[in-house]
Image (cartoon, rainbow, N blue to C red; front, side, top):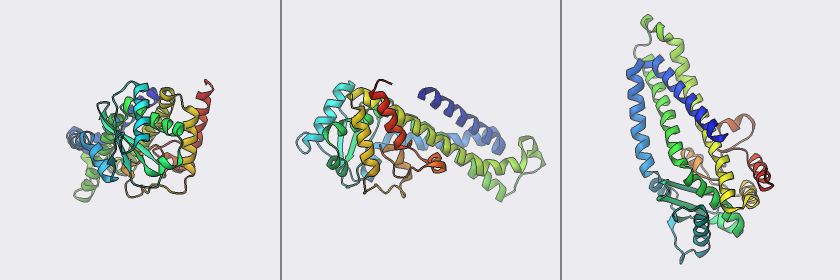
Length: 282
């Protein structure tokens, strides 16, 4: 069901992109914006692991420098039947973790010092299983494609703004909707693209929870870990780095109600409920 939902969201974003491109610049403007965004995200896909690990000052560890974390990741990797990812620790008391890398052969898992302090071994294994599921499901690739589409739509909106400032839209543009359509493209389209991108990210989190629990058998321990992360008094401050929010297992930017539309993660309560059902064979 999640895979179908993600496919439909990508289809909706593609239709939005084509429509905005046609309204603003016809075929030429559409292809130029998409090509530029694709190049930027291609570079991000190949080098994002190094960038984000350096951004959070993550340091590599091995079985000697951090035996516990290395052992748990090694055991979970064997259960998942994938190569052992590189292991990193982030020097912060905020409990969280993320996986990065373009594929199973070039992957890394990073955990914060705070995560290691508050979780027991089974809870930590549940979290690691979730992160390995992201690697197996190629979520970095999916998020990169989503970012490419959303970025291209944002660039088209910028083209529209420049068009309005330096010449506007004439009668000859009426066949593409005219100025009103351009204004809608400038304001509505980027917001819609962001909402779709966030919805894709939330779908991947549900899938990683289920897949991670299946790999390790730690459905209830993962649920317990999510509860601890959600109620932890110390949080990672992602306000200045919202682009990295989808990476983490727990996102302090998430909210309830209307705010949840702009969250990269589903509500923790719903994730825990789903994990409890899976633990009971549901």
